[in-house]
Amino acid sequence: MDGSSYYIPAAAMEVALTVKAPTLVRSWRDPLLRSVCALLALAGLVFFFAAPPTIEKVNDLTGLTNVSAPLVYCLLDAFSAASLVLIVNWRGGPPTVTRRINRRIITGYAVVIVALGLLFALGAAPVERLRDFDTYYAGTPFIREMIVLYLAAMTVAAFAMSLMCWRWALQVRGLLRAGLLIIVIGYLFNLAYLATKFTAVVARWNGGNLDDLSTYAAPVLASVGAQVCAVGFCLPLAGRRVGDSWTTWATYRRLGPLWRELRPVSAHVGGEVRISWWSSAQLQVTQRESDIHDGMLRLYPYFDSKVHARTYDAAVAAGSDAVHARAEADAAMVTAAVRAKAADPEGRVISATEVNPASAAAPESPRDLVRMSMALRRSSVVAAVRGQGGGPLR
Image (cartoon, rainbow, N blue to C red; front, side):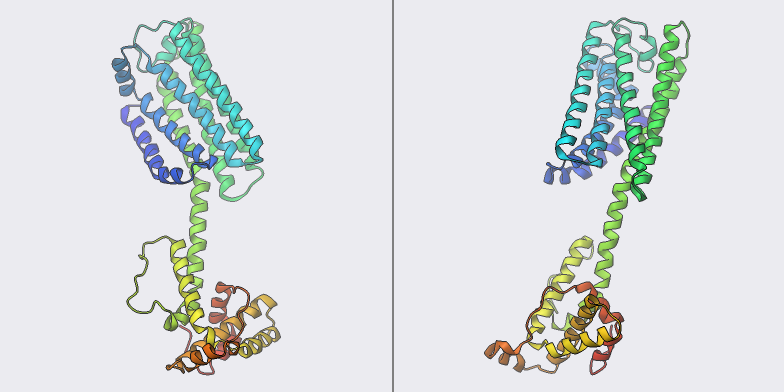
């Protein structure tokens, strides 16, 4: 693998981190968000510092031959710890238990990272090796122990991640289950990477030479494993976001009939500053709900409780349950009020209401706007009320 094979995924991870950064600033106390950002940052650093051109440059800048080796090993083990912390936070549970498990993971891997630095300082690695450090120094005192320690720590994390994700996948369904199973597959590639590394190192201990496994096969397995795991982590999160967006846009569309019915009486008709068409779905829904509430507020003096009562009884008689019958009655009262206001251009009803507030229909509990909107479109009872003088439903 050349430098671009490392730098491209490193850049992708950092772009993803940049996208997440504003959300992290706003929600710093969210442990799951912190875990995701830490994982993205460490993944990018691993790919960047593991690239042979970077290894050579770091060695030259520091003046310490092969210092990149313990640096990359520490980043790999930190990434392993971050993966475990992320899955623990993602799965959730009692906060005290989650924090205790995370402290143990972080403490354990912090000890490993410190030990890696000490072992490198105690050993001797005078010949620079950009690609085959593990096998070249497999028999060197202290360096040998450093290599085994970083591989063992990664192996523990890989087995733990595979086991936790597999057990969790058996308990859930949908995109979360698919994502967890993909993560398991990714960690199988990571375990294969570790197996090739261990095999090459052990072969050196026994006088053999399987260096190609460590030098050429292992990096490919690690890259594939990292990318597969990234898909596994992103799939449930992206799927949830798409699902939430779809639900929000569905709400926006379903509010359409009621919004259009109230447009003639909305305070925002003509010349108002509207939100941009590219605004978020949630903001679009909020704007539409605001318009509906504004229109209903202006119709309040024209609401007729008798229309509401008659429509409610007719809807119940037609087979609607209490909730849907109330939505149909609300919708009928709104459409009748729109007609009544259109027939009163001089606002005599409003003036009379100001003199005698009791003449207006009493406000009810908050209405289900979506059900009201659907009643305008689908209810034959509401259509009958509209047919008494209202125009066709748009």
